[in-house]
Image (cartoon, rainbow, N blue to C red; front, side, top):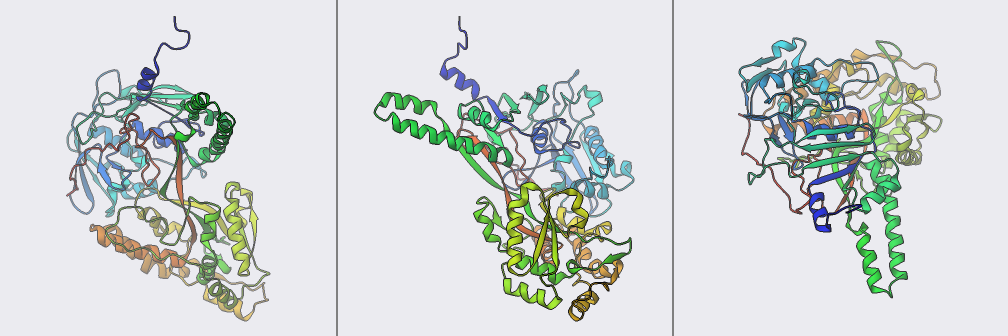
Length: 584
């Protein structure tokens, strides 16, 4: 009788090659794409559901559920689903239909805000505006596999929008007998076991429709096990002892990596002490596996920086201050020596080439023109507009961002800009600048442009206006008079914006040619960067710790992973079927 295990080492290794085990610090509470609240939930829903299109880790978009896509006219898109897409285990055998897709997308379009704290994502705002208020008439089911979507305005990057998390297709769960803990989808895996805060097990979908380029059946894995250990030392022990394969998320890497490094130091010391006993040293080396641990970093469409906040005094009037002057915002940008951040964040890149890093495939070599360090120019601007050491910039930041925020404050102090830092959210109304992370909702620049196009955002963002010239002139002439600050009509402030930025953005949305759209995108980015409603400081990356035998685990530019091609038994990349496919 075997008390612990009757498997040989080779048998155990063979079993482990079919089971992928990883740990999450964030707790998974829901597995519904429209309700997710963190990255742990996002990682799982992309294994359970599919969208019509999919953004791969090479930066390109490929059809997933869609077998063909046809643009009927500037507003109408027609989709045909792949045949025989089998859904996860249900009471009766069921296949995905056009009705399922339309119901799922309709639910997205009808989504309502629950409270002021839970506002729509940018991609949801865009989708709702594209579909319009008459939601039912926007969708037309033609047959079991074919349907059409009619938009309210031209939107060339529509397929890119349909590859985001919110666009994952969730079949009608009431009819499929699914629930919160066993959702029904068409993805590579289905939920087999769900225990709150402890473990989730996904099993292989035997009827998954995607195949490799060699027509091999996917997924390769039989099972995915997700754990929720919170103790960093315990997590490090598990991955060092081959109990875990992968640790995603920057927070987890930051907490666990020091323990792995410490274990490596301890092992080296042990090896030095036992160097005379060769056999014993070799045996210890076999047990110690940190040399087989890899740390990876990947660029994503995410940027750290500051957002300008200008407080309103009424619905019409806006109280003028230095941040309403475009040249002042530019001076703060040119006063930042972004390269200094490399000493603090070796994995970051200085934000000089646009709002987001240029990591998507491009047809041209053009890049947006970001800000570089010109302290003397900054000082000249500050002197011109009458800014002096008695004026103070108020900054709000979260505790985890204080390191780089304080570095920025030190840089500004060198050019004569003093600042104070708030860490409490209650002080948000007082702040001039808010430290934040700008994140693309989907892999297209329009996800960022959209918020500056919406009329409701006019009172928050400054575009295309040099500032309150009356205020600027007054500050130069009456530097010490603080009580006579004028108020300006917002309609006047944004009148120039409506004629320039908006018209260019509409042209961008209508343009079908990718090269021309890239040119328009650069123009739009340069307009935003020059106007400086926010300061991009450095581009962020996502990090992971993995066992070295896990090779094909690379996220796309949004930080999303797909596990359908993951194979622990090989070290070479496995490719999906790539049809020479473009929509007509």
